Image (cartoon, rainbow, N blue to C red):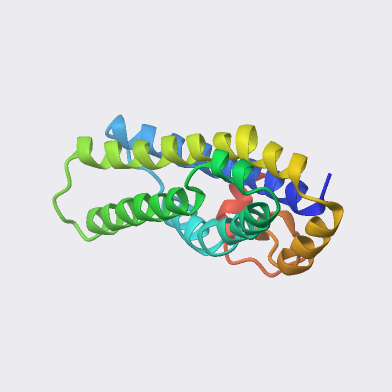
Amino acid sequence: MPDTVDALRAEHKNMARMLDLLERQIALFEEAAEPDYELIGQIIDYFRRFPDLYHHPKEEVILMHLKKRAPDQAKRVGDLEGDHEGCSDNLQNLARLVVKVLMGGEVSREAFVSVAHEFIENERRHMKGEEDVFFPIALQNLTEDDWLAIDQKVHRFGDPLSEPDRPFRFDLLRKHLQ
């Protein structure tokens, strides 16, 4: 298995754990309890700083190679870049609502919960599609040389949750994941 695919799968597991944490906080909000807004903020910041800036571009490098090597198979993947933009848009919507709530703005509980669940469900659906369709197609069609080239381009952009010696600004997240 190419290093990049192993890394992407590990990153998906970390993102799934983040979504689980977020879901638990949203459940508190639904029950009219006080969620940990600092934790929610770090989860949002994590998704902005890592998946949005580094994880998705790594997948797009794989797609670029796939389009060159097997264009017909690449079409089966669908609009990966558009999906990534949709993920970013959903994240921004959630981030704006969290800030609005923290500033004492009027946000209905239903609207907040709806946007949060939409983000969580879309992220999970997106990752499942990559695991079930994109990665298998890439693994079947890309050559060892393709994977070496991909690995060289993306190797330095690791998930901060998987690198315990790396300085980490998401200490609260790390604490909740232990």
